[in-house]
Length: 583
Image 1 (cartoon, rainbow, N blue to C red):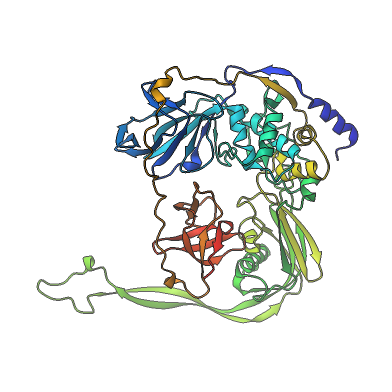
Image 2: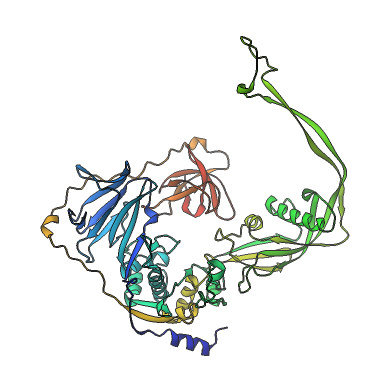
């Protein structure tokens, strides 16, 4: 699709042009809402280098350890032998912007090199970190990709991350980006990612611009072999808004063995032994709907799919997209006809609500007065034996939802996977690809281009963002030097570290047959795992689980969710964050 001539043109467009200055709204400073560390528990703050607050009236020496918590509508700071009411907002400013000036937050080891503002939201501490763009990118690249990726892919990631943040900067809110995948994963500076550090340093200041401004360089883990139009994901009125990220084939993502893929084989002869109830229900319901359009009213449960003869993909959900929402299925089937239908009266007797009972004074209600009878009718059917239909039946079924869930083909938890289909001897093979929205750069595609194809970061960016121009920013990084060094020479004695929140109890004697015990293990020490009410990323968060929390695992779904219990609560978590405990 992309020939040598076109690739050469794109590369010319992406040559680094002369230095570009920033507007007033783009000062090279980024404000990051640290949503990931928001918690019901106090926020631990450790200072490396000295900090000041309250317009310079408070000074904190290097080595200071604080706890910040919300009490009675105000932020309280707890140090060694003192407690201070900081009001509803407090900002900790670095007095020296050198490499050794940073914060450690929430008991973690990563370095947050910026100024920290704490406010209150929903009764909890709300932290926003203000830092320069290069420090920000240092805290993104190791966590969006990491040192397992080749250098040129890391450079492409650094440019995309830097551009995205500056495109978002300067708004009216009190922050520009979040530290989660809602924007970009940011965890602060890492001391164990030298290759990522090198990528940031060697691309310092380089961004991709469109019409003289930083472009919103979207990217995702894997696009499944085709990029996606941003208009299909985040629709806007401007038809030119996403022209720099067109839909096109991505052979690099497709070739990468690390790109996620899921498969399911639908048997030609589906029955209770080889197809689960969820899939059978979808097929029966769709078949019944198709028959009703032919003036044949049948009960879905009385349809038997004898053989699937053909399956094909429906039309794309959007004109320029490869996302398919429907399947066309042709089957041979049998139906049980209704021989008799009758309404049968049914009477039920239930305990009455004591508040509604009426009895004479000083008379104890009898058994009869404590019972409540209700009458209703139910429909009963008498069916024939299964009778084979004389012709095949064609119907359409939505892929996303119950069918995708029943096949265990969901990768994202959102309805945007790319579906492919082919026939084998005993069934139909369904494959889904794509992890993330698919617009802009594929991180797995960038990995393949750099590692297997020997492409540099300019070539990677030209492939995923054709038409953008690379330029180097001209901005002065924020510098600050403490004026009153004598006020912060001696650190206060460090109090004993605050223990992690107590883990919930688990009585392993309660483990039932078929269950097993697991620990929350694959998360950072300062992170938590959401326990959700249902096996979807959009469901209610019931509680945050901390590292090493033990859980009883009742069951696991095909799409990566585990139903778990403790002695006090139950819910769903992602299976990849659990590790079975060896007894």
